[in-house]
Image 1 (tube, one colour):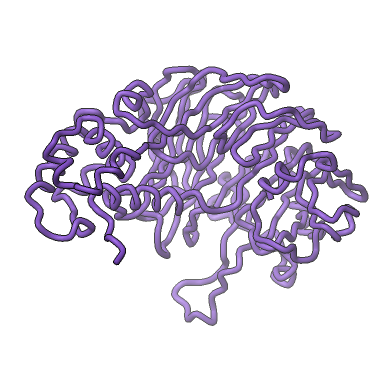
Image 2: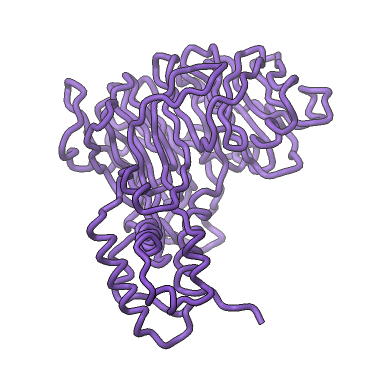
Length: 462
């Protein structure tokens, strides 16, 4: 008979489950610098660089999860994952969220309660389970592992082996110069216990908006937070909002953050969301200690992957389902389409695509990407369909108009305002190869970027 998981394994399983759920979803695995001269390619945890002709560098960093280019096109912000096996290593890394005294105290109380617990190990739940996040509870287990006593070893019995194998993940955020031929660690910016879901640099590169996600207690839900960091090492971040969708944006002047958030901290379930705006930097570009009061601009049905993008003229582009509430199910569609919101005109929300053309739009409008000049949006679909929408007219041009063989893993990215970088399925007409390829597409022409890439690099990004 299989042995049920014990105290140590239960916390570890809950911790991993929260991270797994948070990590699901398509990523932007190929991202072009602002000058369009090179792209950062994240494949299988490795970071590469390539140029417009597809010349690929050797891997320059490992355990990479996401990147964001700085406006100067010579540096990028890199998020990498690190596993730490001891409490001392964790303390030395000093990640945000590591409240050492609080975590140590909670660990000791849980240990003492566990000593007196007579039930099944997998049913154990400390009385103060909600005082720590899931990530902090994993750190608490690491504290107990590193400060083991004979009583805990005896109580756990065979389960002690799980403590010996326990490691805690942190995310390290650093600024890395573009180096094609040698590994370069760059400058450490900050570390965090939480998963980093999105990086969004201000237009001037002077501040970084970061969306992180954490688990609550013993798997009691998930919370996404939006914070803003000054673009210097050791700068103090400011919390902007909790219960947010993953993709906020900056106002054109780089002072305000626009984001979608739900009515509660926990982003699970169906609930209303609000498009809101807060000023987070002063006229000189410094981070405000306390952001301004939020100004609500619109109401949507909330979704984790909803995004807003601010266009050069100040309008806000977003995707949402259209419908009136209350309604019966037959009167409400969950199909997403694109809208403009003009904050300069109260109550000004307008549709971009005529209702008669909704079916022509791929089904992941929440993952749209706007061209640098703000004239177009690329919209992907779950099976690899991709269309370009002209925002001024709502015209839809199908780029890939048939379903691919797998789910959507890579979000298309603009190299410049004319060229879109995307995955073209084999047999799509853009490539004669038997494999899917990364291409650069513009009106009337396409060129293959990944023709000489190893299969293992291409497979891991699509």
